[in-house]
Image (cartoon, rainbow, N blue to C red; front, side, top):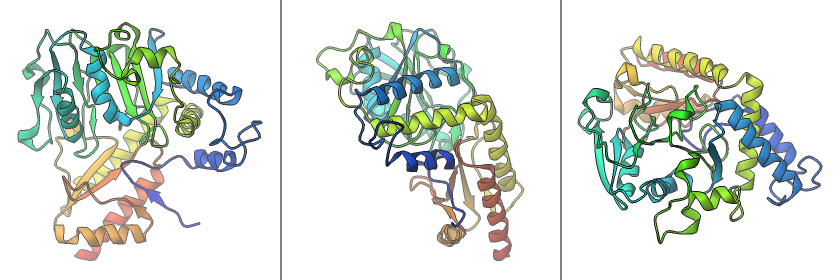
Length: 359
């Protein structure tokens, strides 16, 4: 089979060993005598898988006992609503950072429920830098602070956790499990599964227990963290296949040596790609070096007229989904956990050859 490396921003590449297990289990999952797609979420086989998946995630992230782990539907975008519905608790204001496309989406949805205080805004620098934390305008009486640690489109990633005297909420859809974090510094962490966790359709929510149980009145029961937590994320039929795929990815990460081990690989991959960009006059990256993303690396060709040719030639070489987001242009290589070092090496080699051919 042709060697293919998929740089898609999401749904993204999965580990080859995980794909092999999925292929096997499509016909029969364990001793269930039915496909992994077909088994009941209430059956003993899936219930055992669900319990193990949660424990593996707790082990990987060192999640404290006073946090609930939920496996929900609706994507990270649904959490843009669920966060204010569950965390406002009678307060009228929430703090939000504006550092890119996805934080902007969260702001617009949050504004439907409360007064949004934008405590830092990167719009003036084109979402290429993050304002110094000492300059943030934080409303100390607000219900929470929401931020997006990694902006998938611009490739802008925080290198610190904001320290504030209120719950910190993080949309970690594109950075969860990529490097160690201190979960105890957060009130809520949420992440769509389709980048570093598994298949699209599942959203993992890690929520501190004291933030559960005071939901805004008149909202759908499915948007209540308490209802989800009290029903083990099975208030209705969950995304069983995506949950199953996540369980396999958690096992794979533990076998690799956990988040510390994958973080070393992620740093090595990103450094290799950024070095190739920085050492060339043909390619460029406009993100402030301190805040360059490990997961999503945008880059631009010296002549944008060559973009289409670059994308096609790369695809012909087995390097897929390198076209940048329409809001930014250029190229974007998403190098999530499952992207092997070999893939980044192949991309760097192709970039050098493509540049040489234009000389």
